[in-house]
Amino acid sequence: MDSTVTVVLFALICLSDVGQQTQAGLVTLRDSDIDQWVEKISKDLTDFRTKLGATKIEKAFVDRRVTSRVQTETDAGQLLQSVRRRIENLLWKSENNVKNIRIQAEKSYAKYSPQNYSCSDFTAHPYLRAAAILKKKVSPEVGATETAKTTAAPAAPAAPGSVDYCVEEATLELSPDPRLYDVETNRKNSTSHVPPNIYDASNEILNVANWTGSLDDVFIANAQKDSTLKWQYFGTTEGMFKIYPGIQWYVQTRNYTQNDMPIDMFDCRTQYWYLLAATYPQDMVILIDNSGSMKGSSSIMANKTLTEILHTLNVNDFFNVVMFMNMSIKYVSNAFNRTMLQATEMNKNTIMELISNDEKKKESERQFSPQGVSDFRLALVEAFELLRMAKNQSASASAGGVQTIMLITDSAPEDFADLFQKYNPDQQIRLFTFLIGQEATDEETVKAMACRNRGYFVQIATLADVKENVQRYVPVLARTNALLRDYFFVWTGVHQNQIKTQNPEAPPAHMSAVPQEAQTGGFTAFPPLTPTTAAARAAAANASVLPSPISTPQPPGKQQQQLRLKGDIPQHQRKEEDPRVVKKRDLDFIQAQV
Image (cartoon, rainbow, N blue to C red):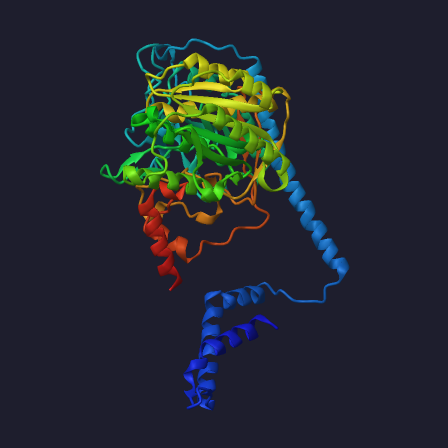
């Protein structure tokens, strides 16, 4: 039965109550009723066909003189082979571009010696900060260049110490790039972004900027050899994010509670492509000490730590959260008992929402209110047993890679050496400890637990420490593949990131004419996949290159056109970041479908 007949039968069933009802309760159908149904169904199907754009598709075929002919198995086989060769060539070129970046990064880092920098010593910008770029444009009258702030001729290089180049804005020529759908870029330089929670002129960042400076030559060479290449970017464990071609950085998130004040939340180390390339897939059990001593600010910091840990997981990972308090353990939900959850956005959000909703309840109604004394031994045994079961059921509830335990607590009564010797004698399960609170005790004990199990210890004294300190466990896990020199490639799915390549304050006519569905890895690109490579050294970080599509992308649909006319294309990586934009987008989508 074809689809048209199915629709018609469904419509007849739904409309069967229109006929007359006899005294016996049976329905009799009139010829006029059936004629009315047929006319309505015909009209609805015609409207549906029009909305699908069937007429335009047919016209396109006619305009291009596309003809049909009988296809044989040989024809089909040749077509598949052609598609296969084109895809293989696409993948090979993309991986080769990434390989070039990795090789240069290794060479630069190997021969680099760290320096003690002072901003007063520089006579030029140590690196181009994407968020501090002044656009230099060409004057149409005389063909001369000018900046947005002044038309004066460029001054001679300043004497050392006379200008603080660590904070001084840089002038850069930016022009519409035909490769990138007229996004304004500079193909002679890359620009760099540093998260706002990291000082962008610290000695660590200045050293990273120095040894990664040679990557620009590789970026340019890759782009010259591969005309289909769109964007190239490189992220380091210190948080520096290099982008080629260079762009101006625009803030992605706005705080609607503070007079629409822009807030820069981007950190390359939390991006999907970076996390996939940084470590192998992992099974993770997160243990949260919920004893009475964790009440107040400690509980808030613990939940924030949990949130940031979950943000470091991707769909290749599996996890679960166990709270231990009052000499017992509790899973966040009974539905999640003794199992591992795939780290999808839905599962991670579900965990965070369950905990957040519990915090809003009255103290007497809460399930996870800090209370009593924690039984560390019981919680650790539960974590080891859960990981053991996951390993035995790797086909359904395990990533099949690294296994880790994350312990969030404000103290520990002992180092549990006997327990670790029994359940983890070969140290194949790694333990990471997060000590909560400025006045936390037993630091040496908690640190010993991590060191005994090939993990890492950090202390989180305030909420401001959470994000940066949680990130520190990622490079520790990355050491394994770095030391083994395991040069593997990871292909991500198409995903949306936070980066905007156009000024959000610009009028709609100047907005980027790029379909939102086609934005991958935060950049203007249309690949089905994004390759990334793992760091070859602990300090040589991850690189990613976006290939172009095999076919030309189609124009944006009605929804994207409507959003673009309003100058509001939401770019948030996670929907919960900006509920007002999500609500507006949903309303616009409904309107676009009417």
